[in-house]
Image (tube, rainbow, N blue to C red):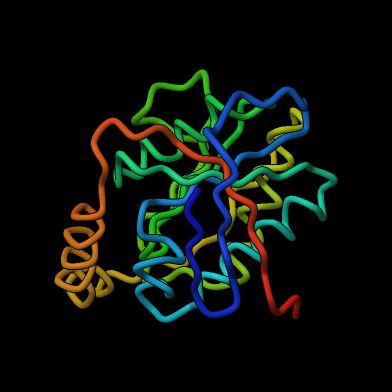
Length: 191
């Protein structure tokens, strides 16, 4: 099994991702280049911090987190929906390398979601932590207030070219037909 590293985090693949059974489980699905080819989001948030914040948010709400990596797609809806379908609670989080994120529920159509965070340049560590908290609350059957997000009309024109390049590069890492793998995240800096 492969291991990928980025500053502050190591993702050790431990086998093919299966269906969870815990009713309080939230699956965090990472895109192919996350904490490997790419090490930071589009605004330079280290991937180690992204994972740390999301897992901390899940833990704060008493949830159980499991992390998987997808190899065959870099489509956010597919990444997040796969996470939800493999989760014991039916709730999953998808995160692309550039930071774009989504909370999904297994019974929803793939292009629907519980919460979508499409503007990756506006993501912050606090938002990632809040995503983890909300996902854990959905897993418990609660209806949390949506995570407040910033909205910047200029973010799209300002960052669109870089986002497109990052997406194209991530798509070059796809492995057609490869199953999702379960990963053990080892985070160096717990701060």
